[in-house]
Amino acid sequence: MFPDVEENALMKQDERRKHPRIKTDNLMSYICLDNDGNELGQGMGTAVDVSQGGLLLESHSPIDANKILLAFVGPDNELIEINGDIAYSKETKIGMFQAGVRFCDSNESIKKSIISIIKAYNIQKKTIKH
Image 1 (cartoon, rainbow, N blue to C red):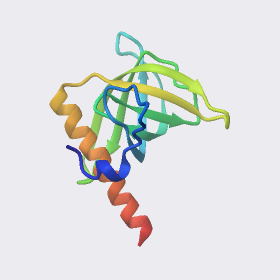
Image 2 (image 1 turned 90 degrees about the vertical axis):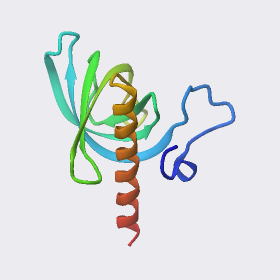
Image 3 (image 1 turned 90 degrees about the horizontal axis):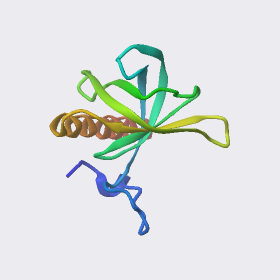
Image 4 (image 1 turned 180 degrees about the vertical axis):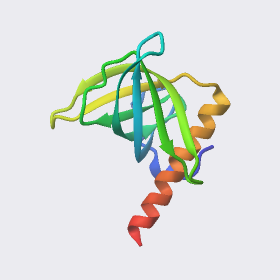
């Protein structure tokens, strides 16, 4: 369904998630929002993995919000924005912060965004190898 899923999938036999996760390393900006859409803060983070249902965002700052707006530049230099709900937020052992983001947009919009994330990651990977 998605490009290079076989190469990037982090699937395990005991995986309980509804959708497979695909490894990425995409830089994204984010805006934390309250339930009324008011801005609580903003920052930069990295999408560690992505699936049809959401993504794992890692940052240097805690993400304490209910909602989030993610933005990144896609493979065709277009600005892509994704709305999400924060499913959980935690600090890692090395002092980074991770947030599970559940996508809120329409299925078609989410599908396009995921494909853009994966394509951008694969382009970045190929550029680094050369």
